[in-house]
Image (cartoon, rainbow, N blue to C red):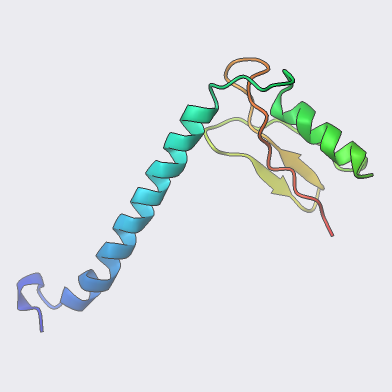
Length: 103
């Protein structure tokens, strides 16, 4: 059907747009994260501090909050019941965290 691509025409027809959409979405997320990670939080707390307060106020005292390193590498470990927000590059600036409650 698409002899130019050596028999891979249909594969490229469907996979290339999906790949481009994924790359575009990744760039948008990284751009937004970079933009908003430089904004100081209103209350001056780090993401880990905000997560701890949110968990405590909802009675989830057994959930630990640990710091993880890397770019956009926060995660939740359901076995350990531990959200791991990434550290802030500038102290007391970031208020985001991936603390998920376990149901």
